[in-house]
Amino acid sequence: MDESLRMEQALQPLALLIRRHAPSNGTHPTAIPSLALMHATHLSEPLESVYKPSICVVAQGAKTATLAGETYRYDPSSYLVTSVELPIIGRIIEASPEIPYLSLKLSFDADVILDIVKEMNRPVVAPAETGRGISVNRTSPALLEAIVRLMQLLDTPEDIPILAPLVIREILYRVLQCEQGAFLHPFAIIGSHAHHMAQAIQWINRQYDRPLAVEQLAKSVNMSTSAFHKHFKRVTAMSPLQYQKTVRLQEARRLLLTETLQVSDAAFRVGYESPSQFSREYARMYGRPPMLDVQELRSSIAASQELG
Image 1 (cartoon, one colour):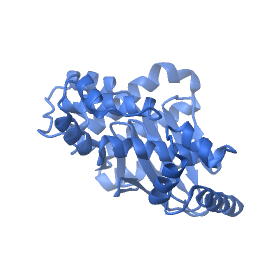
Image 2: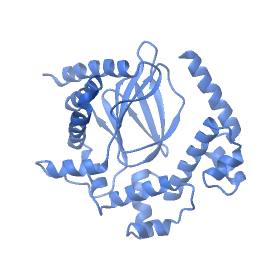
Image 3: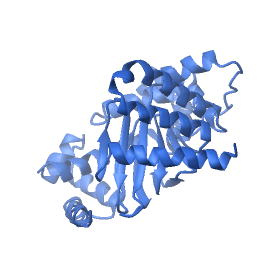
Image 4: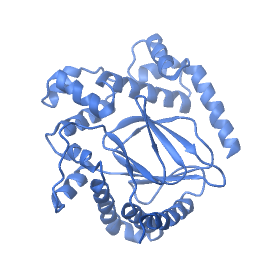
């Protein structure tokens, strides 16, 4: 069968399945713990979150993901993969009430990647240099067909515990077969530079509110400080301190938006000792002082809810 026809025949049922299991605007968890669905009828403001290792597939519409100024666009012809935890700004750029944005995010464990690689008949040649922890790849019919089978399991919940892990393995296998699949492999290999970076990134995300001693963190993964900096920036597009600052400010923005906190309280919660330094860095990142930024965000969210 022609590849474009196979793509179309997979995308149509995928869109219908997402729409049925995510009938309203917003993000919807599913009975498959690692799978979440997204439905949006309007373009979105830039929304920040830390993406865990995951695959993001679009059935309708389009979205961008921005990491440290680098923007990645994906739509039904392409999908996004993140191999480590990354502070990303996501924005829906194609959506309407008539043709809503429909997508899914499937989180995965790096150990499963390593297990699949060991079982592959052909060797996966890892790149010489550590690559970015984010990439956009061309969607294949085989990948979409596997994702449709995973979505169909939501209609038979009793099958999920047995069959979902098998279908997820197939999906990850298809990802490893893609042109950039080799960059995913090293993040699962214990002792590799990429795996060390994944460990360090996980540590920063768990303890972002604590002072960051880069030298100690480099030592904990058996690397010199200069080598650690080099590989960390290759994976995340930023230095360790910039990464921590981004995670802190994103969390502070979320706290200010969702909880009735004073600016100083939010600053202390995410690890700042000086509220004035926090406000300066917040304004530098978001273009507005904290409270003005949050007021604007709330107005924008309220307006989009009225449209929805």
